[in-house]
Length: 384
Length: 145
Image (tube, rainbow over all chains, first blue to last red):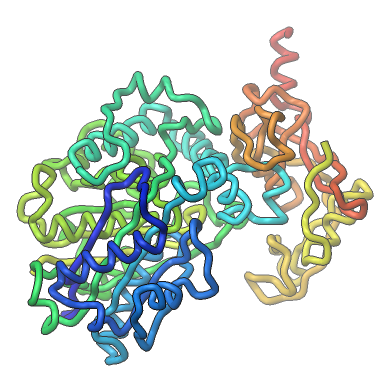
């Protein structure tokens, strides 16, 4: 069993963050997460970051170390889309177990709302996001329209309709309403969902994540260093899968690699699906939640919408999913999207989720996805 | 509107140059006929050599979306329009537009036929698709509209 722990975390209130630069947000998160772990900046020998859309440097992690005034031997900025949180934590585990790091500081934060503005962020995403620059971009797709093409194929194949998509949006909103860090906390019923305008048929505004400022920091270290602060959470292992990057090259439109990544993670950690107490599923759009939930094995193909409607994924249901509100309502902080799933897993495993707490949560599954269902990372964490 | 040109000098340049001449040219590997898209130096499935073949341009809509909020500058104000994945009868799948139709009438499985548009690069064209026989337009006719 892994001896690597998540010893500290920090997460801001998502939405518009004013009065901070992106670097200052990174610093605040880093210091808060280290304080939780009972560690100090000088203990950090590896920094892992993602390149924020709102702040561009040759090597963001090195610029961040420079800003903090520390000289860790390793400062890396990774590219992993929404699968990055699982990649970074698993990389930290490997480095610590292999002896090349002792304490790894992971910071993934972005301010696409207040630095880039919402519209310019969405435009950037269509130019440098999961859109092929030559084979797709000339035809005018927005990122929502690419997910809408998947949604249309899913409807065509399984007879799904707006009740299924709406059930996901309402599920996440209900969860986000009880989370103090969530971006979208106003109640949403099916009428409100249906009243939201079409962005790219069949997807409405409320099928799409909001653009948020936010992110998180995570401190990963060995068990002997992790006892100084809050109750640590054990990193059990991770699994990954990729099948393509662009929609044009996807081998399937309705079934993708999330389940394969989970199988690999479970095999690595010698665990089973039935050991999972909470699932944190990457849900940048409602259709992503439906397909990923099915691919992960929590519903049969075509049945996730009905299961969301029946409350099978609510607290107290068969398997609670996205108890923090997911990307759809907790928030979508640009490049940092997905790390919120990891933070919620840690909070739940510590037993600190307050009125969201799933009783006796022992093991969580945190899923992240990059591109159009293209790359998947699944991280398994256990309570100590 | 002229379409935004793809980057010339890339693997798909023969496809775009043929489109400028009104031909749909697609890459398949010679040993086993795998459709190689995005085009590459060798077949990603079997590592075999690739040859360009002319397609009839007839196919069906595999899936589509109606864009209501365009993001690329040249597309703003053109909404609603249809982006789609097209399955070609003689092999291959292309990301493109379905034009000359009411977006609301488009359905998965509709028959389409290739036509071509110019781009901002005078050497390069792009294939787009319009309703073919048996498509939404055909259904409308049969309802007497």
